[in-house]
Length: 323
Figure 1 (tube, rainbow, N blue to C red):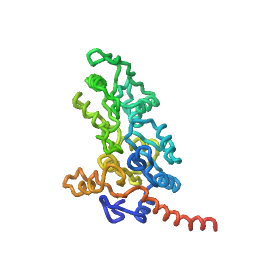
Figure 2: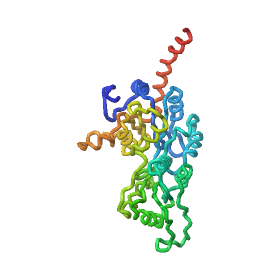
Figure 3: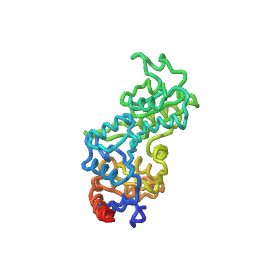
Figure 4: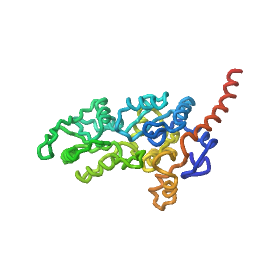
C-alpha cells in the first residue's frame, strides 16, 4: 500500500494522504499506551479519532502488551477516558491471548505457575485454566517451600511483586522438559511520567531464561499469535487491509511487519523518528522490519482526514435521497 503513494519508509503524512490510506483499510489496529493515552490521560483528539473510525465503518481493534489488567477493566478505562464506543470484543491484550494459547493451542492439563499481576490470573481463570495458589509462609525459602506436583506451564508477565522465591520456584518447574515456558510479552521497560523507567516483562523473562537454560515462547507483540487471535474472532481478515498504529518500533512496527500489515508510528510514545530513520538507513536487512511505513506526530492528525471523508459522503447521501 505504501508504494501506491509513491514512498516507503517512515514518511510523515498528513490530511489527504491519511484520508487515502484510511479509505484503503478495513482494519485499524491500535496499541494503547503512548498512542491513545498516557496512563490515566487520553491523548488529545484520540477519543474522537476512534469514534470517527467506527462511525465510518472501520473495524477498530486494540492490541496491547499490557498484561496487568483483564479486558473487562480495559473497557472501564476506555469509557472513563471518553472512548465510549469501545467494546470488549475489540480488545486483545497479551494476558487474554496467553489464556487462549494455553487453552486452545497447548491444551494444558494441569496447573499454571504465574509470575504476574492479578489481572493475568483473572484472564486465565476466565478461560478455565487453573493457577497455582501462592500460600507460602513469609519466611519460606526455596529450600523448604512446597512445590505443586502438577505444574504443566510457567507463564511470565509484568509482576511488580516479584520475589526471589517466585523466580526460584519457576526455575524448578522448568526443569521438567514437558513444562511449557510462556511469556505474555518481551517489553524491556516502560516510561514513567517522572522520567524514570519501569522494568518490563522482558527483564523478568531474561532472568528466568538464564536460570532455566530455556527460551520462552512470547505470546504478545511482535509475535504473530495475537493476529491469529484477532483472525479467529473477525473472520476473513486480510493483512493487506490492516493498518497497525503504535509507538514502539521493536514491538508495534515489528508486529505489523511480521503479520504483513502496513505500519504507522505515532510520535507520542517511546520511539522517535530519528530511531526509525537509523533503522531505515541500516545495512542490516533485519532492521527494515522495524521501519514504519508512515509517521504522524499524533493520531489527532487523523481528524482533518475525517473532514474530507464527511465532505465526500454528503453528496452521496443527497443523491440517495433524491433517488
